[in-house]
Length: 416
Ligand SMILES: Cc1cc2nc3c(=O)[nH]c(=O)nc-3n(C[C@H](O)[C@H](O)[C@H](O)COP(=O)(O)OP(=O)(O)OC[C@H]3O[C@@H](n4cnc5c(N)ncnc54)[C@H](O)[C@@H]3O)c2cc1C
Image (tube, rainbow, N blue to C red; front, side, top):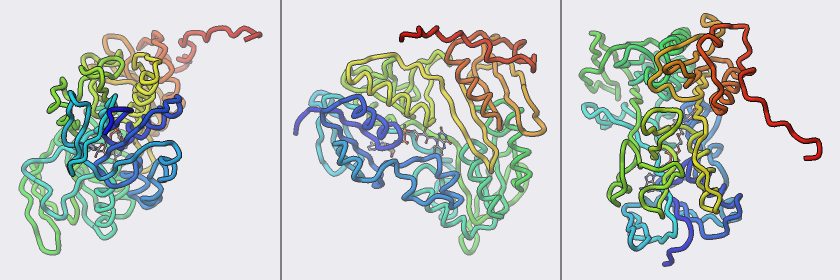
């Protein structure tokens, strides 16, 4: 065993991208990708959208076919959970006892679903959605299900609810908070999606919690809700958020704070270990304190940033966070982070489901939530990235073109 090369734990979006970007940047050393799932690295976003509604099959989710990895010299170790890091010896150990060395180790371990302790997932009709195997199980059950309960009105639960409603199932969503996607978007945006989902036939039980769950015959369940209603369902999908996979790092003595703590260059407290993607907690100019972002954009941009550092071109991670969700044909795009936002200004037509919500924190634009307004979203990413001074008054003036606030592009010399 040699302690050479870059070893990546995880085989999700961040890990896959990092391996590819390293080769793009000219890295010629050894690259190992170690993932606990048996599948070739694949995309998760379609699991709750195009895969769930049958537009895409599992094979269409893989980022690349097997020969890509051989061609690019990326060694795959699939179905191999890493159980221990030995920092002194510069090696990791998998569950079946294999020991793999590293010169630099990257933790891209992602996140896992939160579970309701009282519920467990012991009932065959109660499932949760994170990986391809979960999605396959839910899709199979969905084909025959008539009555579906979604627990949690976050992005994934709502994407699934829209797919299920469009298939003709009766869908109820129970949510402890007062609105949809309450941790991520303002009330007006949450409400627009509620009206859209209700038009698809979805029924919401907001500010409501789950009570007793009783198995019935033929795999059905009776569910008591705190609003006094009793539902009988064939399928309950739990979608109540995620927890970062930090245990490996924690056991190795690395600092943890709702994620594996990394510096501006995505390095941990150990100079030979970095962390990227859903599992990494970092300071960002877009949010107070440390943040941890669960998005494809963050996984990709952190992979790109780290690849550059590992080939000797370090730059601090400073990408504008952005995210999308597609719910039954209505698209939400978010630029920035709304943590601590205290003012919202709307532009566009809320009733027609075509508007953007500009979120301000102490007068500073921190996030823009766009409903079916892709051009607002693209402009918002540029405004936030440039640090342009956008005030609530600018946004309130609907006729004012916010793009004029962008700093002028540097003049290009005709001979350049
Ligand atoms: C159903 C679904 C829909 C989504 N839709 C969107 C969307 O529309 N837009 C968007 O921006 N984002 C979306 N996301 C979020 C996005 O997919 C994630 O933010 C992204 O996948 C994070 O990439 P990652 O590599 O950090 O983590 P992951 O993709 O979670 O990959 C981590 C991998 O590491 C493995 N692993 C963990 N511990 C170990 C270990 N000890 N040993 C070996 N392997 C290990 C995990 O099993 C997993 O395979 C969605 C996520 C899900 C689940």
